[in-house]
Length: 130
Image (tube, rainbow, N blue to C red):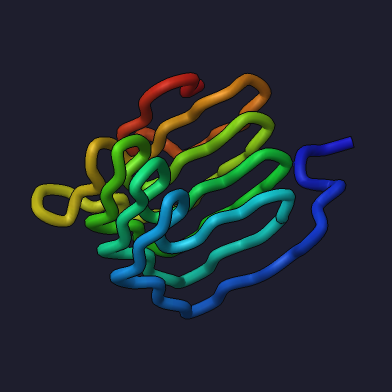
């Protein structure tokens, strides 16, 4: 049994832009019990009041991001991405931004036990990071 295998939904974003959105969690995208992939897309300038300005990977969710950018997203916790309990986030070739395009307060925040995160050395990670 792998994380995300009991998901209620699956999706693929390819060449999608999520920009200038606001929410409590996951300003650009919020996943809950969902499995998905994002390819060649841009998640930028989003804000979440609680966590995951760019995106929030909730309980039982698994997300893979390839060749995309998460830039200039903001939140109280996990400006780029927030990974919750039993959530999974894997990235390859992701531009996390720098300077004015950086995510604030950090690129990735990992909360809760049982989370799996593989975001590479380019991402600023806070919390239960590997």
